Length: 76
Length: 151
Image (tube, rainbow over all chains, first blue to last red; front, side, top):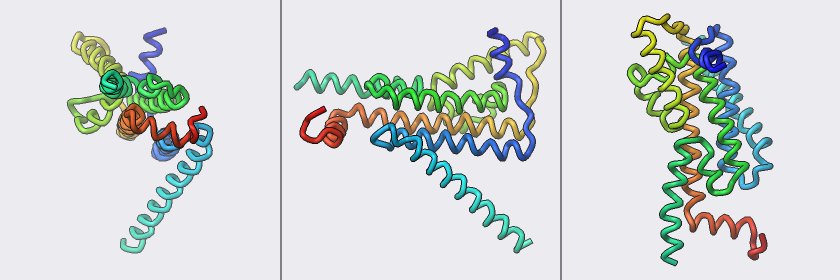
């Protein structure tokens, strides 16, 4: 049981390009949850506030990525 | 009065230390159960997801990833457990056991980012717990949440 559990953390998972790109989403969600947990006065406000922040972070990052891609396409 | 000052002088470092050792434990110590449990689950899950993605051998590596390790060690309990696992694998390899599987660079990159971000999020939680443990800040919060002194 313990060796099976340890094996989960000792054997890496092979990721392709798109998978590593999509794994940004849960990471941003955990950032949004922890940040809003420390900031919200009432804990009941956390789910909605975290969801709004998560969408904002993801949309912002995609916008920046798209902007940089556009600059790259124009210049090269 | 002196007793209260002594209590807060002990309460603040104890809260900081507990929050550093286990994410959310500082909030739990202060009686903020909901906030503590949310931080504990989120940060621990983020850290161990990173370790599972990149493998502990490449992810928690103070020799090759010093700066990332400094970020990871902000969540001490998780990082020390990960490092103990890393050391046991390294010791097994030096004794001639089968070496741990090497990870693809994309997996290691994502894993290191997850664990580093988990550590930095715990730093935020430590500061928050520390601020909540400060008597003047706790009093201000109490007044704001219950004006007129009615709980």
